[in-house]
Image (tube, rainbow, N blue to C red; front, top):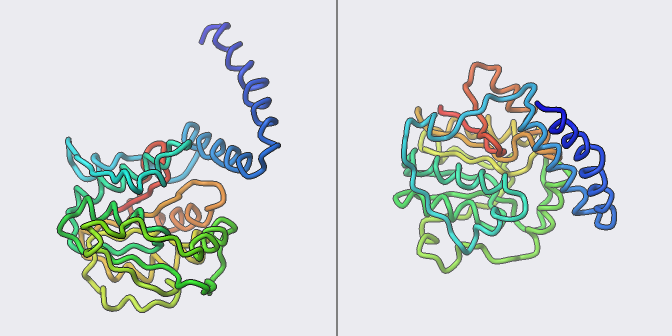
Length: 259
């Protein structure tokens, strides 16, 4: 690297980023997200440890993957932080390539994920589980989870309401820590875990739904590596040491494996 380029890097580090960060003090919520995303991007650019990176099409052995995005609900993913868009597109790719007939999702929120599962798996029945309104989680949760529970209780309509895909999306209600998943035993082709993000919940949700998965099915977890969702990373690092090949997508927070 030339001396001039080094000087530009040092200038941006010492003045650009730091001064911009100070301007964010006037908006604490945005400042929090700025710092959290900066740390996430740093770990993506300078990985020291963690899950190996692999693009979805590389693991699934494909050279062309058409995906379907809903302009109604993709706004939840396509916003000022581009890593979430990478997550959504990779989720849709998994769905297209796995060609699932039964999809089980933990963590419905507003139904954006469930709608995209249904759009990209036109023959699948999508089952999505979330806490009933005014119900407290039984295990430890993160601050971000508690904020999401509060917003979920607002009664906002599901984003798939009125869509043709809605007839294949089945909303389930209960706490994933205690929900009876036995009806899905050995039937699930694609499992998506995006409920509470504490270590206790992610571990619980993985182990309790693993018997639901068919051999060759796909499991995906959201928010790997993100600040404030540290339980996801902690559990997946532990789970991968049990001999499981778990990958993360480059530049995003989606982790996945084949059963």
